[in-house]
Image (cartoon, rainbow, N blue to C red; front, side, top):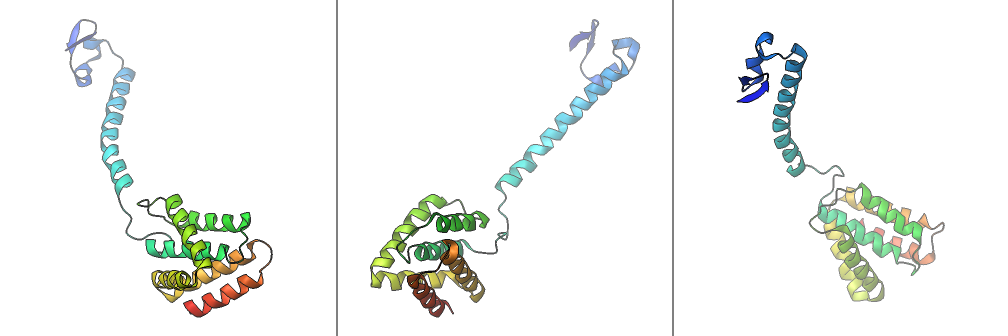
Length: 180
């Protein structure tokens, strides 16, 4: 019981209905009701917020599986090292591409990218590893549509620095044969 209403014991705002009894105006009662209503809304809001935070969407917005995203990044890193020159514009294109992906947080992108760059460098230097690496990329890309998207991104990457080198032309031709 509360002694806020001039000595009259009141437990809820409903008990304040007779204004003479509790000395509160109708505005005060409305404010009390509004606060109680907001409190109830927040109780119902929390479960829906939790559901939104932890609900896994059925289909990714980019239309790709995580292995396809990873294969595209592997391929772009391989292409970035095709001419043994790395330009900021090429790195930016990869960063912008990944920003459009719904990257699954199980493996943070930075960790994946470090491994991917290492694999791409090794593939450039070692013919046996290159064939294995590119076959692995091809298998993860899967569909012809995704392979086409990956080739288009490679072409964009090759001209991102302003010109396409002979090494890049040769790599692009090999990729076309591999992926088509």
